[in-house]
Length: 401
Ligand code: SF4
Ligand code: SF4
Image (tube, rainbow, N blue to C red; front, side, top):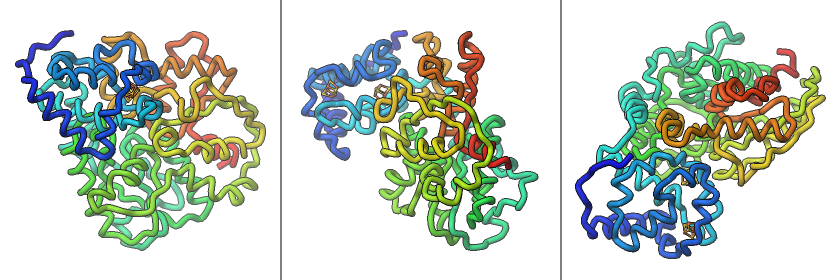
């Protein structure tokens, strides 16, 4: 759909181009070869009127307003595949695509569902618009009781940053409870923030709302400072990415691990507990911001391989070349828009890859994925046998907890 906006002057292209140069490694944008690799690896490249290389072309020829007159930008799911494969290492996702989204938001050209998620994030501290008071409801009935730091004020070894979807989404809560059981079984001294936790803000940042990201990060930083802990462990690869790569620039700096790294370090303790065989061929889906962006590929596979009976198989897109589930970086708040545009769901594409790899379980390590992939198994007729399991759920099943 073409959107009518006031035309931007060539000087706007110049100002915008200069603002990218000022970003970390942004000056590399001058080195664009116009090779088209970014469009080729982009999962929605075919559907974008202006994929990254073309946007750079409009900046060079000072007709960037053409980009702003379309809503093509909202097909970008911030998966970072373009950045990973650009031969001149232009930080396309961080420096270009996110900046264009910021401009789109300033111009008021924002799909309605994204607007709602951003408004909820600002108002409630989570994109779903849930009550902060309900953030720890998933802990009900778990023994020993989960330590909510605001109640106990006890120092802990690990601050578990649970995250939005892991806290609130009914399907994902089962994986959250599984991880809690594992941590309890391993005797980890951990606590959570419960109602004091705010969204990590990473997806809001990637969707072009840097202001909301900074607001959320600062709130989390103030809460972290109230408690004593040695490290943060996250459920969500986006929280891991934000805490590792984005929060330090705001003066919020703590050692952080994704839960798969934390558990893989304890494999010697975990292996003797894995008593029940899970006889399955498992394909593991590398989340974009755990694998491609932060290089964590082996730890989730080591955990899966340690379960008796498990045979790992690989999908055609894997590791750095993984295919986005369509959820991260704001994609889950653009599902309706992208379906209307492309009539393609990346989650369905991924489920088809798992079937082609002869998997009967699709294993995941990101809270956005269980509901997305499970929905996809319902719409693909050949996928009725495919189960979607978060790694913690598989470990708990094998431990018989
Ligand atoms: S992959 Fe890099 S060099 Fe090639 S067109 Fe895209 S931005 Fe330019
Ligand atoms: S970040 Fe992913 S979706 Fe966005 S342009 Fe790059 S490859 Fe395409």
